[in-house]
Image (cartoon, rainbow, N blue to C red; front, side, top):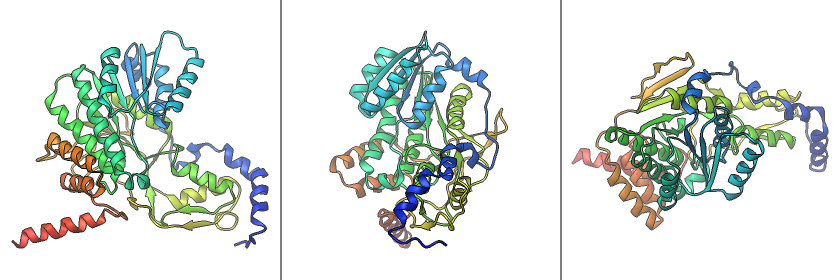
Length: 403
C-alpha cells in the first residue's frame, strides 16, 4: 500500500478531486451497484388507485417522501397534502412542485409534527384525505439509541395519532413505510417501527373503514445519512473508507423501486398485509465499498484504504426480511412478496401506550426501553447500552423458573 506522509495527503486529496477518477465516481449510476436487474412494477394499478384522489404524504420533504411526491404527481391526484416538520425542507419542496406548473392538482403544504394531534386533526377535518402514505419517521440507528424519546414520540405516537384519525375520518387506505429493521429488532429505531406495525394490526381488527398496510424494504440507495453517500464522501477525500465490520451485510433497493413498492402496496394491498420486494442476495458492505472504488478506476487498499471501525450502537451484522412467523406468499408480480402480520398475543396497545407516555414524562431512557422489551420479547439490543436490560430480563426469567 502506498505510504503518504502527513504533508502529502492534502495534495493527494486535492489532486484526486480534480482527477478523471473523481469524475467517474460522480457520474456512476446507483443502479450500477446492484448485482441484479432493477425491478419495475406495472403502473396501471397505481394510476387507477391515485387518479383524482386526495393523497396525504407525511415526511413529504424527506428522501422517500420527496420521491413519492414526484411519482404520485404523474398519476394526477386531485389534491396532494404534504406534511413535514422541517420548515425549510417543506418550503423547498412546495416551491419545486409549483415550478413544475402541473395543472389540475391542488398542492397543500403544512409544517407539522405528526405526533401533535391538535395540529393533525384540523388538517384531516379540512382536507379529508382518502389515501395516506406515512413516511414520517426518525430513522438513524446509532443516533436514536441516544434519543429514544424522539424515536418513540414520532415513530410510535405519531403513527398512532395518524392511524386513529384515519379511522375517524374514513380514510380508505393507510400505507406505513416500515423497515427490515423491524424484524427481530436490535435497536430503538427497529423496535419503534415494529410497534407502529402492531398499532396498525390492532386497528385492522377493530375498524371497518380503513385498511392498514405495511411496506418493508432494506437500505434505500442514496438516501441522506445512508452508506452510499458516506462512502462517496470518503472516496472523494481520497479515503479511508470506513466500514463497521468486515461481515456486515445489507439488503439494498433503489429509490425508484422503493416508491414503486409503496404505491403498488396501496393499489393492490389489503388489511394486515406486508409488502416486500425480492431484493436479491444480501450485499456485503465490504464488497460494495470495493465496487465503488473500482468504479472510479482505482483499486481498494492500494489507492483507497478500507478500514474497520467496529459496529455502531444498535447495529446488526445481518438484516432480516421477515419474522419467523411471517411466511411470504407469491404475488401478482414475480419480484413482489406479500406476508401477513404475525399475531401478537396478549398485546394491549392502549395499556402499553399509557405506560410509554408516563415514561416519556420522566425522560428516563431505560424506563422507556424496558417497556418496549417487556412488550416485544424478540427485541434484543446489539452493541448498545440497553443490553443490560436484556441481561436483567434473562435473570428475572431464570429466577421465575427456579421459583
